[in-house]
View (cartoon, rainbow, N blue to C red):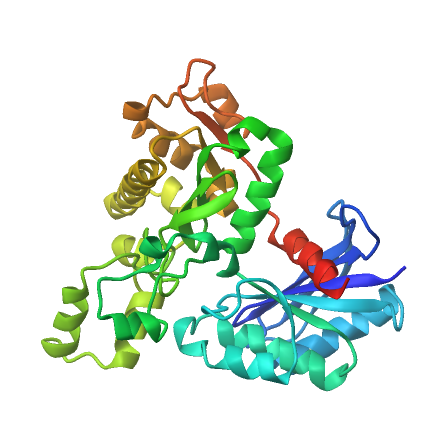
Length: 391
């Protein structure tokens, strides 16, 4: 049985999963993670039920490159799936710019174009491309497909893509792109199965995790989203600031004499929940903390989400459903409850027991808007795209 390998490469981790390449809904064969690539690597692979198939740890002093990380993965695949069993590799690539509005098979020309977008997604794009190069160097004949987090948002109307900047800058590519598109695309697809009426209507999806954003969908298509030119915009995140007055950046550059490198570190790695709380970027730690700063970070997170839900509802001309997804959205009843409490003016009421139990529908029967919790599955979406691109 041929296998479609899905890879999501980060700066220090390599998430992977394998799917049977038959027609129909992709069937998961395995999934796993190689984390700590830069320091004390840890490899674990699991079967579809979550049982550990293989686990391996390296000494603390060990450092792996992305090339070496793929060698570890390939060795495991040969032993557990079979030599020559791979049919293709699908990759999550964060930024496709204005050029790539759909998944594409990777060749050297595509890779060169994607490298030009590294400055727009410096946390993710270099590592996404590093693993593509590693695979190509070792398996030059193995088809690879790039699936973009920005592509789903290419349906946004032109007015939603614009900044109020000179037209020449817009034409040069400085525009609102949006991210988390693979997650939103999966939720839109899943919603068609769970609630066709809601899927055909006006929906706000809240993808709340270490990276967080919201998107407005009309009939399953993106019409607006909170992230824009980069994955810094919108609501506060684990370590990212979210939206800022551009004057703050000018002040930090001119008055505080911050270098661009220092400003990048501040906005991407030292802000968000971590910056406000001074404690942690992990919502789980903040929710159990008794520190007032943790409470302030949570309040700001909820406040900004509620404000964006209201703004997106206005863009949609009303709201039929609100969907929570991703790590915080799927697993934190407290955050869902707080956000929904701020939505009372829209007629949102939730069932406390259903919310605590992580039910698929957590709104009360009398709620004017259906509120749902739908686990996302970006890897499955990548598998579907990879198979479609390769025919």
